[in-house]
Length: 69
Image (cartoon, rainbow, N blue to C red):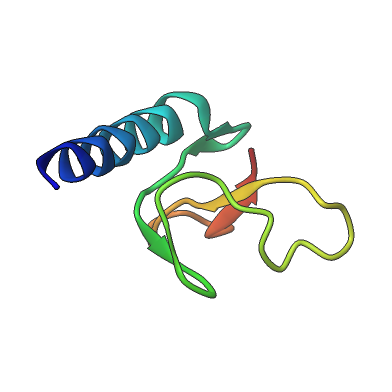
């Protein structure tokens, strides 16, 4: 049981670090976690209809609020 909990913690930290490091947009850094059809800690393709490209939330102080990664 302890091994499973440790594995989940490692995956969570790795996913969050990957998302912050790799998910950048041309207009700035992504803000994680964000909520859109669930909670996301990395870029998502959820709701991306025109082009299935990953996108992220950029925060309330951003002009566009979101952008493609």
